[in-house]
Image (cartoon, rainbow, N blue to C red; front, side):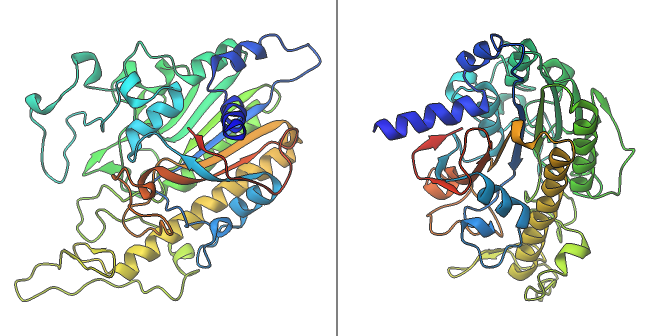
Length: 384
């Protein structure tokens, strides 16, 4: 019991999610530099979908490097088996039932052609668009401690200006504000969704979004390596694409370069049946066969998107080495919830959207050379 409690306090301290730690940073001696923080979140990644978590299939050398140089947390839980509430807890340090974000934020966006009616919203007016503005988020507290903060990727805590990252304590933002997008068009069911700070932008339309988030993260480190910084890098990989194309919708997307790294998986579609419709069923021995997509193709896009994300993470780690700040940087990686379609959550039961362990127990890695011994495996109960 004592080991679990100590582990939880230590980990939350490293994440700076407790205000006591933040207050203590204000009292640091002039000779002691506060650590930089790099918080990396993948989207719907399965518990086993990492080489260092036992996968013989996934190619993830840079995340495996993090595990070797830091700690692997094998009993790590998020607060909710879905994107928005999990991220809300991460940035507030409060459970969904406390911060008010206990469901997906819909924002009147089309969802497979369906538009929610006003009476279907079970939240107050101020909450319809995002995280309650009365909630204090991590970057605001870090700003008081002298940090500069940037977020590049999936925000998912509100689309209106008062809810966007710059209004919540971040200094720089490039990414999308809703639940999911097409990886190449950056649209959510046909609606352009990318932002540069508070302004919608289509300047990079057509470029694979993981490359864009990598580009912005590297730029941020280059510009801010001489001061304490908080880099929040919430990738959308390997979340399903929010595309109107039934051959894509619901599955991840990946560049051809990375799909070629998995030749045992076939990049094929399910043939149409006699009615001209694509098959749509769930088999007792395998994953869901979605509209026009074979299980093999869904898995291929999924794993390839993770390997692409891994390369992007490697670029960020290389930048920390280049500027000789790796030893004074806390790097944290985990998935926002359990894996969905195309994932491997074994040996856990359940998946995204379920309160079984497959929905809330996720892979997690932490590296901080000053405090964490390389190759540590922590089996204590830990949570975001």
